[in-house]
Length: 371
Ligand SMILES: [Zn+2]
Ligand SMILES: [Zn+2]
Image 1 (cartoon, rainbow, N blue to C red):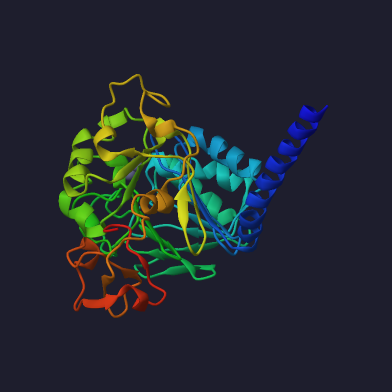
Image 2: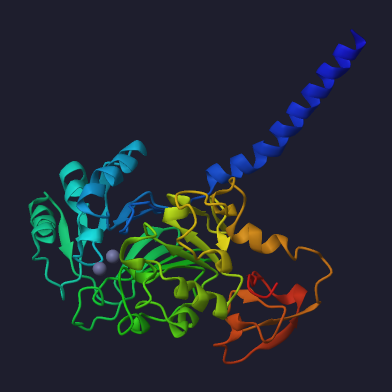
């Protein structure tokens, strides 16, 4: 009896602790706004869904024609039947094909496409016809600097160069997604030639253009956007995408870059509040990202398909969370971060760097690169 009672008390105490432990963050979470990004696994192709803090929905591409129903199914599973902003990066089938099903099954309010390309293949033509027939749908060709506001300071900015290039890939629309501290760049199938003209920005997450093709990624391109995480939307086979050399380039630039591949992980989810963000799953460090030869599919022996471990911001900050950090840090006048090293590459573009006491950093956050 006594033992049972003690056991029961222990159980109650554990349960109480668990409830107390979860109650507070759960409450805070529900009160705060979120931006969600999901790269759908559409094999050889691209499809990315974004839910903005103001609850508006964005779909960028929808894979090939045969993947359209999969994309629509995933959206409907999440009770989404309206796309407020549907963005077609360019008319190639592996991006545009599935959009026909999206127009057929869902309400689309705004359709963005690059008007320096021709939507004249059978599939792209059909998508454009459906966009024109869609009741109340605005058709927009965005220029560099066109912005979609997402509420709570979130925004999507078109950052591609407006020049009319010779290939549709180079004319792909590119989007910078910003919310709080998070910056994500996705740029369709931009290639060498056009991609270095995409508006420069220091990003956290870079979706490698053109499914990680060697014709799309150079050292200078990676340096230009300085990502901590890269995403590759690919089936891991077709056209040799992604090319292993691409991961070597990333590694040469920064060996701590983490890689997320749809062919290894499946759908890739990222959730951001204004204060922090994280991927749902862990990625792999860039040195482990290459190699198509492994048994393929999900897992393939790497830790990439592991449990819902924390990644993103939390993974970065846990390493050096000790309080014995330097009392003096480095900042710029308007920068939002404070740095432990004057040589941090986050300060590469700084005109003037100031040395201050850590208590004087104001509401700046710790730089994720140097701490
Ligand atoms: Zn493509
Ligand atoms: Zn393409």
